[in-house]
Image (cartoon, rainbow, N blue to C red):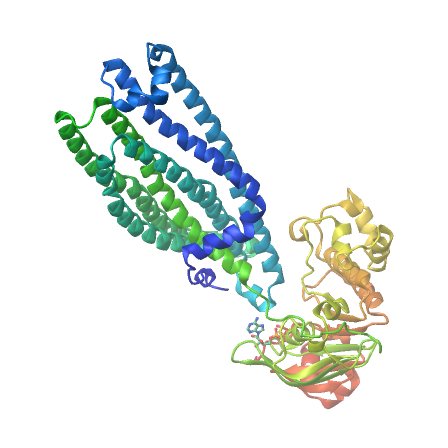
Length: 607
Ligand SMILES: Nc1ncnc2c1ncn2[C@@H]1O[C@H](COP(=O)(O)OP(=O)(O)OP(=O)(O)O)[C@@H](O)[C@H]1O
């Protein structure tokens, strides 16, 4: 399993992440974005207008008006006794327009956030299913699910409540600053002194939040892994009485995660008070200076009130900015991880100029001196196999001897590191992956059924198959009878992992899927779990029909089922130890003969 931390890629610069979001996900939503920004600006203008209104209101009420209030719009609106009606009406009108503006910009931004996240999730999913088997084996499903849901949520919050809110608060702040400058630019200069202090403190808090968020995400991944394991391993947990053990392990992960969550909460909560401390200091300075100037008759009362109103109104955007900054920090960390998943590219791809595989000789498979190691230790070494078209060949050998690896190499789930594999004389590295895998039907040990209808599950063998073809495949797989007896027949959902069906029934559906594929080459990994005699007979009959006229390679776990094979390869520690038909191998009196005497279960490697 990949450690969750391995999904945390080196952090890309913020500007790069934002540019990418804008380029890949916001471009199509330009119209909505422009609308949201326009209403954001309207909202800010309304806030500034509220502050501006304080000046004329004071002037009118106290008869102490500056030159600005005695002229222009203010005079027109509030002069000559009109203020008694026009002031309250203006406040209502501004607040109502502001309310509408808030609604429009927030609802549009939220929908943009949701879309961005949905598109990111779409891209993550597409990237995931296209990854190489080796990469997929390395990612624990729990970690991915948490990455998929939790990171995406953080990203959405960062967009709809973070980045967008930053814009809204900034626009408001700019409008209020304009009012402050209009009222008294000197006072404004003092106000600006707060900016470097707040910026420095926010930088510190933001950095710490990013680190804590990263650790928190790793913990969330590890918790999701524990949940996935508890569900996947439910039968073993119950049978072995492991409830207390797994609960204890989950408790440890939960308390570790809690530690990080508490730390994150503290960091987040510190943003507002830190801002308030700086704002408090600056407000005191401004008030002192303003009072001093008013006392000396240099600032009029209405100018002072306008300035103070704007400044007090500006405190809220500043506080909010510090808070959204923390949300944006978490979101950027999440975006970094999301993009790391999206950017992961498969290594096994079509070679340049790859052609479609042409199965012209019935699917003759050759392994020529093939070697492969997953890591350091070789899994198969110098393998030579010759499989005639239409024949049935069995791979036998102790556990870990390399049988599955040969399937993996033939399907190009992994690339052979030495030697070559051909189908009808064509090197599989030179043909397209789609045509290669399209020529092969794989029946796995544990039949995998998806949580869809049985018909859909069978049709996965050949997308686009008609209902009649699906039913014919099911008949050939001895599955038609039990399927039609189900409550909704072919439309019955196979359930999570096909749990509503018995082992033998699941296998027959998987066989029907392979039937429908009608591929010239069949790879069969025999089920190890013993079925009852009747079920086993039905599955064997279905398999016999499936193997007819196909090149079949069987991984045999019970030798009795492959004694009739045209040829058997006995693998031992990644090499072909013996080859021949059943009688020839028995006559050799070697490994095969020993395995045959023991038959089930096969001994483990080195046992
Ligand atoms: N994904 C993997 N990563 C690393 N090593 C692996 C991986 N899969 C298999 N191996 C190793 O490669 C060797 C061959 O494994 P392989 O699965 O091919 O054996 P097998 O004969 O199919 O065993 P079994 O009968 O138990 O399924 C073993 O030593 C195994 O430990």
